Length: 353
Ligand SMILES: *[C@@H]1O[C@H](CO)[C@@H](O)[C@H](O)[C@H]1NC(C)=O
Ligand SMILES: *[C@@H]1O[C@H](CO)[C@@H](O)[C@H](O)[C@H]1NC(C)=O
Image (tube, rainbow, N blue to C red; front, side, top):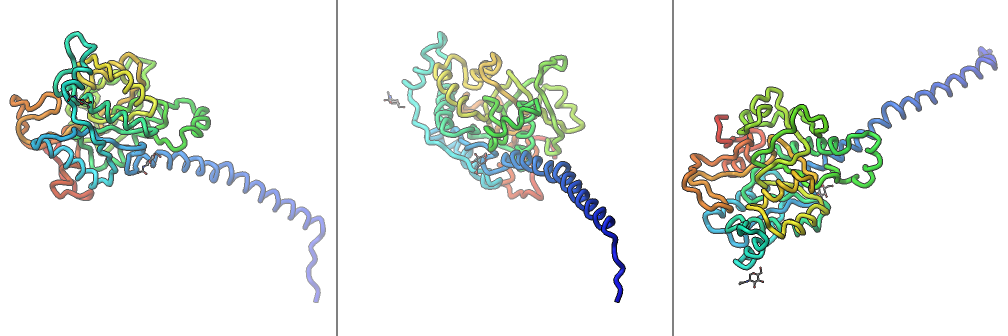
């Protein structure tokens, strides 16, 4: 039988064409899809780490007094419940029982004897917890009445990405720092991430040197108690992240190891009415590189009854009608306590749902 024969030049051309095609295909795959996907998964998975049980930090540490009075025992108990609701891993370093000589030492450098009383004890509590934080590359510090949204583990991922972008503005730096900061979802080019506060102004709009970014966050509460116009009227649900000097209230903040050491060293000299005020001024003077999230991710929970604070004690003047966490849409404490679920969360923001 006779087979049709292909001419030698034809076979040669065909072979060359196939080789060229295969090479082109390979080049295109490498450049366009495989390589870029690979790069993306590298940075996506890095920020995804911020959704782990310690929200991407080396540890979460709570500032809890040695032996809190019965009327404030709900603070730590509620935090433990909320933590197990969200699968968070929180450490509770056991503080010493502070006495007069400890608080007097803290106030010794201040002409008017500040900090005093509860504020001094709270300050010592922060210092003690920060001392524990120096054992970790980064740590998130919680005051013991702090609360968060049930969606915290998604919120933190978006915030990590925003912090990373703000602190690494130049693309060409990314590869360089990726080596040193490869398992630090927020990077390490900051001192304090002020994630829970009771007020922090945004940079002025005409400030061209301002470091600010924002992203759409559908988990924001419908009403935010604040004096900042952009947050009151916020139809596109923007959460802002920016370099700041102005926050107040140390509900929740993260520190790097170096920052924890430096704060312990410097804040042990007292010289302010309260710890958050000290840190506010250190941020304002640029001694610490501070970044804030606004609206905040963490806010204090308040029980019904007279307002009660570790710093000021019971304040009979302010009565909280129903337990609440302002500026948090679905409080983890309330959901853990009142039988809410991720699918059907309850709200206790102090506002109608
Ligand atoms: C969460 O991720 C951070 C950053 O990689 C890491 O240091 C920390 O140990 C992780 N937490 C847990 C509970 O695995
Ligand atoms: C106060 O507590 C410290 C430890 O925190 C202790 O060394 C000191 O002896 C105590 N002072 C008094 C007067 O009890």
